[in-house]
Length: 193
Image 1 (spheres, rainbow, N blue to C red):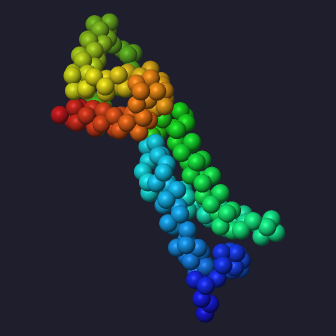
Image 2 (cartoon, rainbow, N blue to C red; image 1 turned 180 degrees about the vertical axis):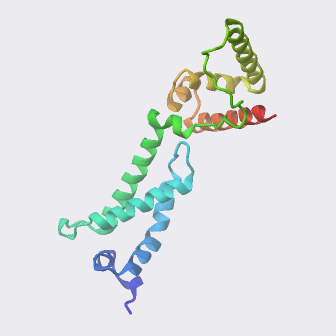
């Protein structure tokens, strides 16, 4: 039985590649504090700190997979680089506009009638009544939102990203994300009441 705690990182990586999985546990134990510290300084839109820690650990696994001792760089230096790259990639990916629909999806099907929403087969009067009902619903929703939440929601509905909304309102992206979370909760409560 080897004393893994007394081995260098490079020796552990070599043994991991030879199939000794217990060495990976030792490396994870050594680097988990660093991963937590790096993750704590970042913000993942639509996620939490645990998601970032998982991304950091994924960076550590990639470091083990890709480390080449012949490059004359210590594993610690290489691992730090891989961890930080993985964290920054996750933060950038979460901030991309293409993920917004997935990150902000709210299920309304429970509250909506199961009728078909197609305007086909509806008379002009029914379409007008539907429009009036939608406008009335919109007015009621605006009543439950604060003035700042209204501005954020309107900007969001206009297609602005979190960072665009934040800079336009002189707020942080985190406060915009928090406001959108509150808006979702209020809307869900409003639709269930």
